Image (tube, rainbow, N blue to C red; front, side, top):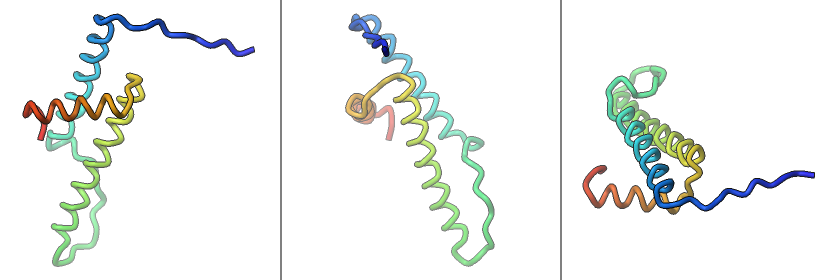
Length: 99
């Protein structure tokens, strides 16, 4: 028979520690996205008149996808639900910590 592990409720210190870990990991992911060398490798395409614009749009979309993938990985690693992460992002945005 399969055993179920029940997690004991977290006290406030544990919640705060988990939040700080998530916040640190989130900040690190943002720093990785902001550094010029952190942009994912995008294969070169044949050049055309609007190729630079197309590459810029693709690069922006790739960074967005990379950010979303990394955020979802962090959410899974730290067992955070979308609602709580959304609240965190809105709070950071309202404080001017992120754009």
